[in-house]
Amino acid sequence: MGRLISIASGKGGTGKTTTTANLSVALGKMGYRVCAVDADLTMANLSLVMGVDDAETTIHDVLAGRAEISDAVYATTYDNVYLVPAAIDWEHVIRADPRGLPGTIKGLKDKFDFVLIDCPAGLQMDAMNAMLSGEEVLLVTTPEIPCVTDTMKVGVVLKKAGLAILGFVFNRLGISEAEITPEVAEEVMEVPLLAVIPEDPVVREATLEGVPVVEYKPKSEGAKAFMELAERISKISGLKARVMQ
Image 1 (cartoon, rainbow, N blue to C red):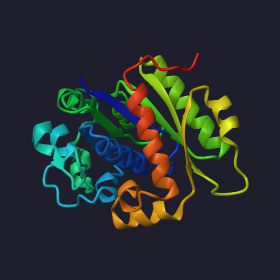
Image 2: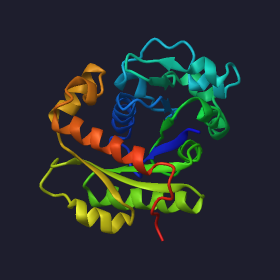
Image 3: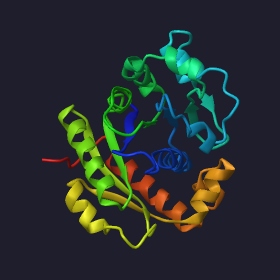
Image 4: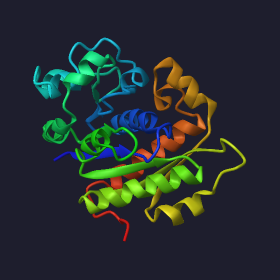
């Protein structure tokens, strides 16, 4: 039985999409069958990061009742990794009902070892429907205190909704001098710190090339951090996670 993991945050720009793409490819390298789902229905970017730009059927078509979820699953160029893309035009956005996301995405559970859901930021309706499509949550934050506190609040809400909080990714450490430490962030978040991703220009370079950094330059610091994250996720996903009290 596969694991459904929502990748979530309290603010935009934390690196949820980059995390989803790299974690998917890293788990694929480990031999797991993985499906990444772009559940950000208004700001879809996962296809660009994963190098899939020619999909005819998207999650929007499924939510609009025009296709089945199986029609929107595409093989990527990465071993064992599949993608459910989202559309980028407004016509598709207004036809898709985000309330259908949980039931739609759960249909992938029996077909993959991991289903990673790239969610919108915050706690609006579209974000909540995306995040509640998962059974477990991986939170992503950057070292700024407003981002950490907002992401902590998302974790609190999702725990109350019955999801297991696996922990959080501390992304882009070293982006500025005015940032908090991983240790302080873990105290604020009150969930396990699973990975520290350094500010690495190679990660941005890989994103511009449409290739996850774990494939683009696997020996880079950013790539090694994402591989370590995948190893931890593979060990703890499906177990009783430590969650907020």
